[in-house]
Image: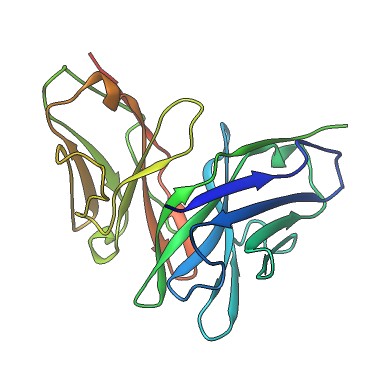
Length: 125
Length: 106
């Protein structure tokens, strides 16, 4: 059974970098049938997909247009985990952040399951 | 970006059947996935690729997708089905979620 354990600071100052890590157990970050996603949720924006990383002969990263200039998602195969960095945060980035596994169906990202427990990150001075 | 529209709320009498819709342009050509989310918890997949149930999800949950509307049907509704429900599709290299529907079981 796949489990995802998130960690990272819950308070980030404006203009700083938000960093979260998701440790994977029961699956491999470099598996060829899975993608590893970051998603956030806030009352104003609902569920918002941020991006993913996945391995299919080589590493791919895909990001939402809304954050693509500020985001990096990267795997760490030695620790079987993946991480999110979101730069230049503002109070608008305050949200519950989830890591989640995505299925690759015929090599294309598809449904998302399971999700991590979520981390409320507040951007405030 | 691809837009998915869901009703804000739906109510159903205990033991009855209800549907939650997800509207999108030619959504019938996409794979639609459904999640439920209870307060303070992460979303949980209940239907994938339009009609498929993950293991552990009751047969009371079913899905369909055609034209411009995908539908989640919950039969014999139970109090434990009260949750927010979200639809999701992949659109090119991105992911879109619906705004969510709050299901109330009366």
